[in-house]
Amino acid sequence: MSETSHAHEHPNQFALLGQRRFGPFFWVQFLGAGNDNLFKFAFTVMVTYQLKVSWLPAQQAGLVIGALFILPFLLFSATSGQLADKHDKAQLIRFVKSLEIAIMVLAAYGFVTHGVEVLLACVFLMGLHSTLFGPVKFAYLPQHLNERELTGGNGMVEMGTFVAILLGQVAGGLLIDIPEQGGAYVAGACVAVAVLGRLVAQAVPLSPATDPALVINWNPFTETWRNLKLAHEGVAVFRSLLGISWMWFFGAVFLSMFPAFARDVLHGNPQVASLLLVVFSIGIGTGALLCEVLSKRHVEIGLVPLGAIGMSVFSVDLYFASRGLPDAAVMGAAAFVGIAAHWRVMADLALLSLFAGIYSVPMYALIQMRSQPTHRARIIAANNILNALFMIVSALAVGLALKMGLTIPQVFLLTGLLNAVVAFYIFLIVPEYLLRFCAFLLTRLMYRFRVRGDEHIPAEGAAILVCNHVSFVDAVVLMAASPRPIRFIMDHRIFATPVLGWLFKLGKAIPIAPQKDDPVAYERAFEQARAVLADGELLAIFPEGGITRDGSLGEFKGGIMKILQTHPVPVVPLALHNLWGSFFSRAEGGTAMVKPFRRGLFSPVTLVAGPALPAAEVSPGLLRERVAALLAT
Image 1: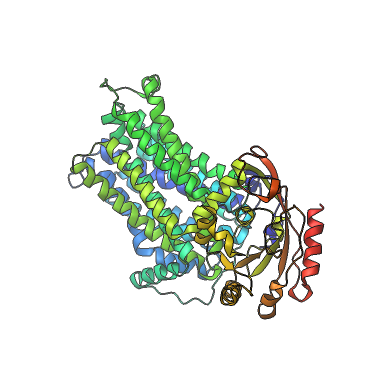
Image 2: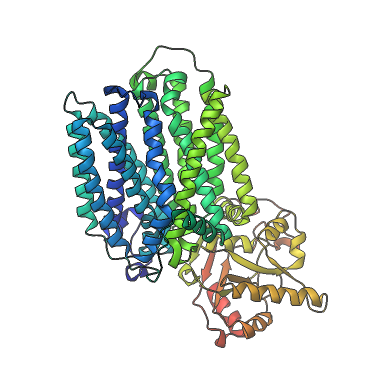
């Protein structure tokens, strides 16, 4: 992690490409994804249009090739996750890329001789290649990128993957279509890309094993079950795995329907189907890259509900945009683009895929950040297993829907509505997503929020955050500043506040009452606070005991000392600037939330974090001094 210690050493995610810890890895995964799709698409076109294979009907070729490619993910993901945890990831990457060369040499023979059986075997082997690389890919990133870089790095990988898929399919289609020599050109290209990937892999820096003592369980079935149980231990992580798998279900519906959608609904030729793929890929890549900007270079899971909303809205609108198109002669891409009604269809596809990119990247980053490093690759392997299962279910569900008489636009509509139901369910069982979404909206739409000294907010381990108490939304603002969940100790009366009280209950805030009023509730609050710290989480306290009525900093009460006696953790002072006088503060006669837009929209609000104090040095007076000093900056 030595190279990741410089949290601010590059201006944006693209600058990572110039650094050895990321650049070679990015190009390795880019070339691998491109070669996968160059090979598969060329083979699909060959058996669909150029060869007559009695035992492999043309209309089933794509389905068989897709199923063979996914099969290794189900059989070997559990084993590949163990290998990635046990061995150096750079060495595994080099082994996998050497394996790719061997597979592509065999595939080259198949293309030149038109050996369909050989090429089908290579499809399975390339699926195995991708299965081995998957856990390595996502477990590699958190070893070399810090929390501020993880969202941008995942966005780059997501963007690179979809661009590589697009370029691979375009290249495969063009090369196999060359008269008489198409197979030879594809054979040469596949081997060349594999060799280039292996050469680049040599520059990937060493990534030490996270669990070198791990004993490999070679039984894929028992290990798959064990991996799923391992992933289930962390509720937020497991629900995020399901959320990502749902995204693959969602995306597979659209990708699988593009040829038929272009032909039967849009009256387009294969050029139009390719155009839809281009639009979809650009949308995913753009959404993935936007995540770093929207999240301000943190892992911001508040983007996930935003992504889910966009996915549903534009899936539903795609139904309305495509159901009323008039009959027309089959047209190419140029004629298709020339019709105004088709621009709405393309805009819907671009936007639903853009929001899918925004939806998925923070989930990947959360899994990487919150999984235990010793078994992170096995968690990713569990994700790959679930992804494969969801994609298979997607294919079966689409086939059943069409057999029941639903039109393709109706399938898109149903998928969009199902997405809304699934997203709502996920956000109810993992309320952190919804809370962070509310914090995201508040700090982006109502305030111009910025954080100074955010490197002092610990990315891991137990700590107590202490902050001045200015408004009813102080807790929501603090949520937006932290890459991790925060549990708040809050005055029990705030839970009676409409909407905000419900949100705080959803976020498992800890209500506290004065000891003289309710000694049982008082002691219960401290018991819960100690449990939070014992679990290695962040606890936040407003030591003034209530929201300021005049904007000044009050005296700090001594409750924090009672917690530190049993759990001596670091204490981080925080200071909120400029919230006094806003709609949620008690300005103007001591009443809050009575004058909307009191200071207009986008008023500046700042949170300043100071260096942590060791527990042994903490006193209420010293904490107040530190917060006061931060308020003066």
